[in-house]
Image (cartoon, rainbow, N blue to C red; front, top):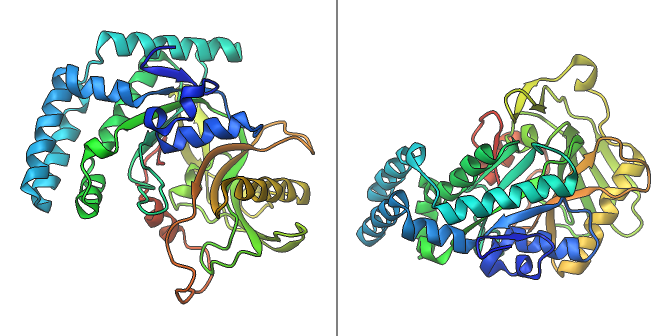
Amino acid sequence: MSDFTFSFDAAEAADPRHSGAKVARLAQLAASGHAVPKGFVVTTAAFSAFIEESPVGREIGEIIRIAESANAEQTLREAATAIAALGETVTLPDAIAAALRHGYEQLCLAERRVDLPVAVRSSATGEDAKDASFAGQYESLLGMRSVDAVAQAVVQCWLSLFNERALLYRQRAGLSFADTPMAVAVMTLVEARAAGVAFSEHPVKRTSDRVVIEGTFGFGEALVQGIVTPDHAELDKADLRILDYQIGEKTQVSILDAALGKVVERPMPDTFRTARVLDDEELQALAQTVRRLEEEAGHAVDVEWVLPVGRQPGQPVAVVQLRPITGKPANEAPSKPTWSPGHYASKYGVRKRAGRSSA
């Protein structure tokens, strides 16, 4: 452990000042007994040291200070373009590189696997807050399986703090990048038989008497990228009765390409396109998990879940992300409650790109 990395099971990992909102919630969930993948956090202190001590970091800081003081959208767009071009020139300060190497090697050892595939997920301070949701603006990358690949992914997560959408959002919210320093989660990549999202209230109608679950085969990236229509289920929150199950036409699947070292999309095999993803036991296990998460959080929740390959009935489902449900107020007239891949991709700001999703 150092100021630059904490294991998820360290007390410091549950503090969003060090770990950002996303990791802090995952660390808290792990401590309360939920099935959360093992991992470590590259702390906000590491990000601050990168900005202050590395040549590229100092250049980024100067570009942003000028752009933010100008308070003009075009200047921010130009700043985002300039910073994106700096990504290939980043060299991590030695202390951060050493801490990252140690964290990854210890995670590999804990899982007893050399070159462990991991997910690298952004976790900014204030991300997914109910009053200022940054959902979809920052990067997540899946399938990294070497120290160098993890380091590159961490840098990409850091630089996503300065993408055009995030810069413009913060300007409109009256925030500076200094108000939302970036931590990064490095987590064991759960081998997914199925994955998806679940809501403890209806995300369109905003009715609180049911759990809504959407899922697809493989990793969930094809779903959050809006390129697949997932299966859709609704369960009564009180007694977990299955009220509705609609099978989606799943034309794409996200799989881990071991040779490339990342998750990629390819056409779904014909036999899987209209096959049911989730059986009754899996639906009820997911709904029970979501109901418990809502009770513990004290508010409606939006959950990203994974069913691991080989999971048996009665075993837990993996929780890989938890956020408050944000968006349409409960008193706003509901829209027609149909699935729209474009709407989901727009909500989470996802860009269709192999091996990559927005977090």
